[in-house]
Amino acid sequence: MKIAFAYFPLTKLGGIITGRANLRKGFEELGHEVDEYFISTNTNRLPDKNDYDAKVLGFEKDEWYKDLKETLESYDLVIYYQCCPHKTKAYDKETWKKCYDINTKKMAVIHDLYYNKYYQWFSEIPSKYKVKIFGGQKRFIDSLKGLKAMKRVILNPYKKEDSGLYDEIKENIVVDHNNNKESKGKKTLIDQAKLIPYPIYFFGSQDTVDYYNIYKPHPNFSLIKDMGWGDIKTIAEYLKKAKVFTDLNKSNGTNHFMDYTINEAINYGAVPITVKELCPAHGFQSVVTTRANLYKTIIEVIKNFKNYKDLREFNLKSLEKLEPKVIAKEILEYNEEDYIEEKEGLEAWGL
Image (cartoon, rainbow, N blue to C red):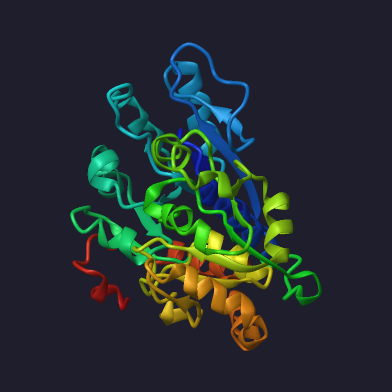
């Protein structure tokens, strides 16, 4: 089977890029061929590079659109991994919609909660072009109740590679490699840095508004080892050494939710400390605390690290449920279902 991933422009989001790479591995492990395409919104010339290292297609010139249509129609399934451009003051043209007017099976992925803010102009697409929708978190699909479409929660894939407990190299350090956005709760670590007698490593973009307005001016920020936007290999090396990983995002804990940062920490044997219960429907475990008691919990876990071996082993085993070929198979089964439009609420889908 030939499968194409197609991406409209998106700001830098490591989780989406990681997810697409893992899903590609899944399809390829099942014996399918996958190609990737970046759909440019440029009107004058097509860019030479993009965040996905994908082939570039365009649609704003007749010859570009002809090439796009012929190219995508040569595939058995097209997955629009970023379903549409974000509607902003700087970009509000609707010519991108014709990119769905192709004669093949189509799916689109929803990655966040901002449908009402950025994706309202996507609303006519699923019904008009028979596009099946899926997203890796229940809350993403919950946010689409006003969207007339066939919808499904399908977990984000995660490929276990180089995984282990790494007891022999573990150090008394804390890592948080969520991006530098205050929705991730990283300011709590900065607030309590003087109370935590261990090195704290941050990874994340140094270009965000919260980084400049909240993190960097903080009087405790000098106590944080600010590593910037790290590549996967570098982050992995620190997670292998870390006894503790923190994820202070208060929206975590829905039944169909696992952040890639959490998956990565589990993969390398760190104990996840969270402020919400961790994905109970899929058996993952974390040490749950409050933001006020974070420093106490970090100290307790590091001092008694040996007591958390069962939790770490259990989490490592649970990652097998997210293997890319398992998730890819679920997507292909969904692809074969008849298109049934809008069943109200997730309960109708058995979710």
